[in-house]
Length: 286
Ligand SMILES: NC(=O)c1ccc[n+]([C@@H]2O[C@H](COP(=O)([O-])OP(=O)(O)OC[C@H]3O[C@@H](n4cnc5c(N)ncnc54)[C@H](OP(=O)(O)O)[C@@H]3O)[C@@H](O)[C@H]2O)c1
Image 1 (cartoon, rainbow, N blue to C red):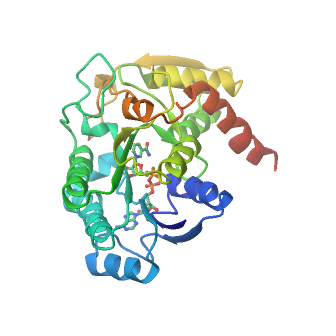
Image 2 (cartoon, helix red, strand yellow):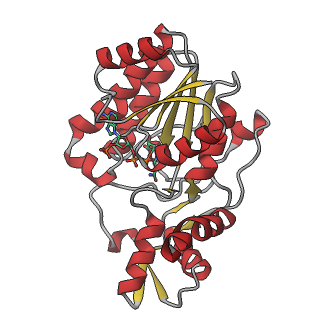
């Protein structure tokens, strides 16, 4: 397939490129330095030139706290960018796969969210991402919106790398124990992206590794698998205030994925084990 990827230098984009290349796709990749998705004319021109079979949008403004003080740019990249891609999707009759987030929900629930549940974003990041979703749904029929959460991958900063680095410098780690979700490996999300683009099963999907934990429980799991003997203490969100409000309980039930007979993603602990073995530990040995 001819695949057009935006934001290919990011955490998800990099792992997705590896997966797409392994399948032998013809790929045209872009990032902010070559195509700003906020520029409609540039988006239309690029897509008219390349005429892909599918557009995959991995570009986003992902600094959740930064969005709170940079509202215009957050909405430009997370709402107008996807809108431009949806206009192109409609004009050239090409499907658009877009990535969204659990932050579109408020997290004030006690059971995992279904795709059709009421969105009530509490942060600028969440609001801008939800606006991006709505723009896509209103401007093209051929869309896949994949909501995911707590991503970690080989490239860029992520929670796993941060905790491992903190463990090298500290004797105790203190981590919030009242926010729950499903840590998701970008490699596993990339597998789903590669499967879903081969279908016409358009719609909104929740895509996460299975299993639910708090950040504190996830940290315990990272330290156990990395064989690091360190004390991990729990704290509350109130004790660790951040500019952007995070959803408390926002695991995403992978309901539509199951209904459409896609393979369920493995448990987060299994994915994390592979990530640590294949990515970080291998790099340390080299
Ligand atoms: N990370 C998570 O935990 C998480 C959780 C749920 C959902 N998601 C979603 O998953 C997707 C991928 O996230 P990620 O963590 O891989 O993000 P990321 O590492 O921040 O990558 C995003 C990429 O997009 C680029 N970009 C920013 N503005 C752009 C623009 N106007 N035009 C073109 N490219 C632009 C960024 O460049 P710069 O780095 O130079 O800005 C970066 O290379 C995003 O849609 C995000 O909202 C992420």
